[in-house]
Image (cartoon, rainbow, N blue to C red; front, side, top):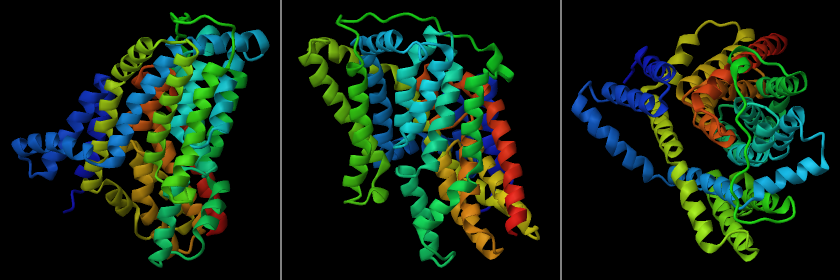
Length: 459
């Protein structure tokens, strides 16, 4: 069934509610209920029961359950790093040995470098960058909104530019599917690698973030962002300042992800399960932290599990937001939002405009759905089919979908990944969206122009 303009109205309603109420959970539930009303013939009773039955159905899906448990356990890791004294020890160690890092610019640059170096998984990147740089940013008067922007605007772009991770596995799978269906021809890995230089939004965003760091560029709501008061947490253990209690658990987590991808892919990292890999990585990390912290008397057995349970509890609101963000993504998929947007732009179009239009449609789709991966899954088949039929440069089309998905996700208030970055930096989710939006729009406009120029050159 075709829902036409209604398929766009539902995600717009959700976004409007999120901006007006500043209550993401209520807004998501409102959008989900409105979408279910449409899908169930405007029967409110059926929509009501479908909503709560749908939650149970989501929890029965393995990757969703793993993602939600992962989000809870991230809270436990963050809490334990603080309560054990690992964070304070690391900050003191940095302050005493690297005066350049112990500064506003140094704190922001540290988050940026971590985001670039750790390209294994975007959620892991945001957790590490946020956890390590947050106390330094607080100490040096850098707002957590700016830290969230730096984490958000480095992790996803770098993961798409160095796709030796779950991002690459997903994108490669979509490209290979199109090749197997004879929609396009060529080698999947070669096409994905060839698309990297055309991933304009990711490239521009990484440059813009560097400009923000070195020239302290604050535009829009970011000007009003206030730094979080700096204070040291109560710790159960006092010792000489050392980086190891902070770094070793994070290193274990980062290393465990590619190992998980290798094992779940049965020797092929590109075929591995991203959700399973990060799920086991966080479990291995918590086991390591228990053995390390308890054996060195940094935490007692009782104190460890007290911090563990407190960390889980603090993440329950975030877990609910993630659950409902995934739910509304499925609703929007059932409504056919992306196909309707593509239909609006199809017809007699000059091939030079098509890469830019694919970028715009992917951006709107990601903004409306709040998911870059969902946008890739929806828009890549559409974009590749359109590009092939019009004789376009296929790597350029692939890059247009990737860039649009990341841009729209960065700008969306209902994005699950934006929620994770807000959590990692310790700032309000809506404020993160508001302060990041002007920078994302600058990168989006530059990318749109670049896709038009590239489309004109290769058409």
